[in-house]
Image (tube, rainbow, N blue to C red; front, side, top):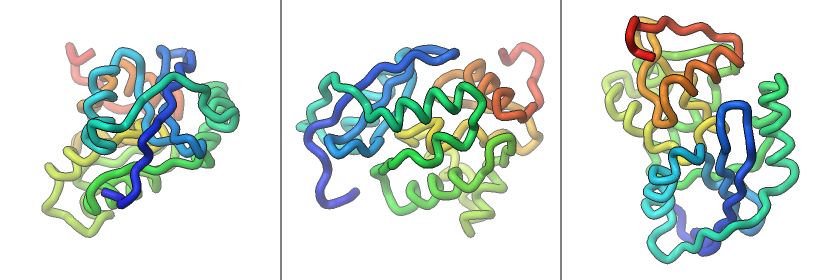
Length: 181
């Protein structure tokens, strides 16, 4: 965890083709969290974990650059979200996992095992999955690009339907197990 965490965070709601998105920024405009409105409980839990019980979350507008980048992503400019200033608070291992996620280009996928290898931690596959699941800035730190070792679609906190939509939007086509979605 970093030494000086913001005490006030701003929450904005932005409509997208796959549901309302929550953008959480600090007062300087840095993106601190991203989730979908149907994941509000998960977002609240992550905010308490990373920013403590005293951080205040209040409604406010996200910077136009962040809103514009999100809209551009959904309009087909898949790299637009890469330029948004963001800071995720987490352990050194989580930070490494999240940096590795950011190296996966849009339209590509990796398995958890491949991500662990890229991190130099080949035996840490399960820990990689846990770090990805604790990612507070989903989409912008693209944990949706990680799939199972067989190439099949696997878990995603925002739902497998949304993960499949995002991957297809980016040009990837994971295997789908019958009855999974």
